Structures are given as structure tokens and as C-alpha cells.
Image (tube, rainbow, N blue to C red; front, side, top):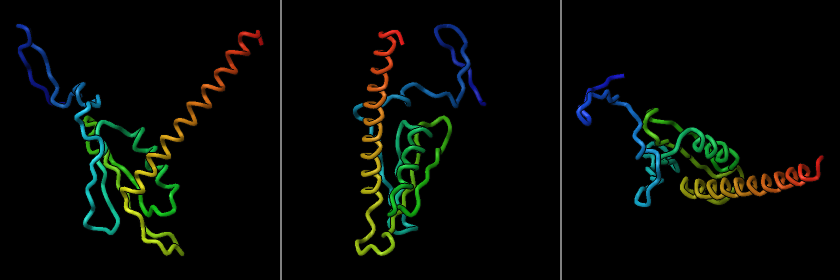
Length: 142
């Protein structure tokens, strides 16, 4: 790690050049969360940069994309460990025997995100139900 010294309030302080700054972790209203860059090397392929996210969300999206039979490839990378951005690559193709053209990567990702939201809402409802049952059992002395 490289570092420099700064004079802060009359005192010397070490500052690492690869420190993670708090403003890189918080979503602000004016931030752009998702940006698509079409991949010129392949048909129906795009890279999506997802700002202020990490492996947790990227892996969830990647695994959900793999459940879609029209997704030919889905993967992600984190460009740098101190930058909270991930790049998700999606390539689509028409399913075998499907007469419809391949959907766009943006359409597939949009559907995937909707499914992820539905899954988390279902999980939250099931957790609340189970926790309510647990509390009722505790109150009853079981």
C-alpha cells in the first residue's frame, strides 16, 4: 500500500491512496445506478456497470440470470477491490426451437431484477410469518 502524509488540524496523518471513501458506498438521488454498454464483439451482448454494489448482489443476479433459458452467458467481475462497482456481462440467444428472436440483454436483466425483488419480498413475508409463529410459541411457554 502506498501512502502519503497530510497535515490535518496541525497534526500529521497517514492517508492510504487506496482507502475506501464513505461517499463511494452510499447511493445518492443523483447517482446513476446501472449503465449499459453494448459489446461490439458479440451479438446480443452487453456489459452492465452496477454502481455501489459488490459480490453479494452481482452473484445473486448472475445465478438468477442462469435460470433463464434464453441467456447464453452471464458473469460478473469486480474491476478493483476498493471500487464498489461490478460489471455484469449478459449474452442472450433464442432458445432451441423458439421462433421469436433473442431478447435484448437489457430486457433479460430487467426481468431478472424483477424476479430478484419478488424473491426477496417472498422471503421477507415467510420470515415474518415464521418469526410470528416463534414469538407465539415463546409466549405460550413452549
